[in-house]
Length: 358
Image (cartoon, rainbow, N blue to C red; front, side):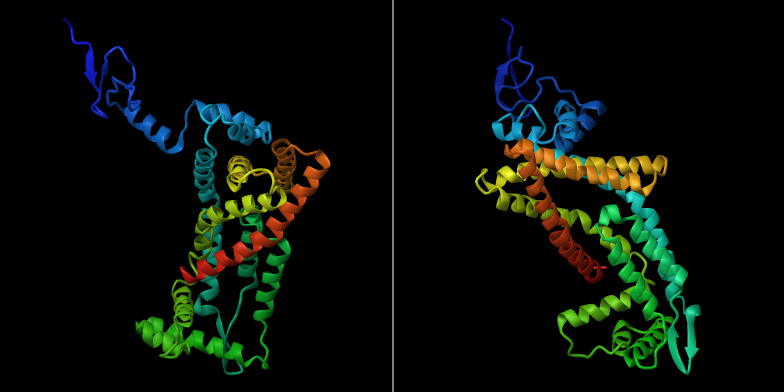
């Protein structure tokens, strides 16, 4: 009599060979290792790029609030899990974002390198002063302005930074600290050229031997920036964005919880936030893709970004089951709190972390 029992290669359990999948672990009974199987499994396991993604994509884009509603109702296998969706689209977004930031980093590095160039050091009344090239300043601030959509840095803040840099470039006999800073720069620049040790250069910068951890770290980073002519500091800031979003998304969910505290546990609002941030990543990815092929006017980019707020209003209305007016008011307040307080604080922390771990 023919043996109708086979053993699963994955869990070693026996089952009828007529089964296509193992009833114990779910692995395919005849799963020969091919290139197709290898790469499909990799994509499917880590990014869940399967039929559920395609089935979830259109509702995410055109039916605000639909997916989180279905998920909390219990339909958790029919559509892609919110965290998996977020992971997949965020990887795609940051991959495309890397192409955009590469150009910005290159422009910023060139401007900073030229600004740090010793040829731009001039003598004024026997005091060595760093001459800030206004052209380089404009290149740097222009880079920040072009990248506002991704960094969230407001125009007035960039203009304020521009003004500060321009004012810093003006010589004033009353600012003794600025004169000392210029002298430190010249001294350290000379020490770098002769191959002095970091300890000698830090001492020349004015750091005491008994300086604490943070002060020592501060001076060390200043020295590192001078050695590298500021190169890569903008990239260090961009590198911190994915980590920041890891904390910013739950904060957004927490703000929603404050406004809808009777509408379920924190995880209920986290599901909504995962899908909403996934939508934002898709929109930003589309903007980057279009601009890589054909540069569209900035006002169109901003109109598309503004549409994410309109999407939020409809999503909140659908998910939390309230009227359009109250949904608009709450979505506006949530957005105001998030973008006027939470995001600027996060950007400040990112800028500090970029400097400390540059």
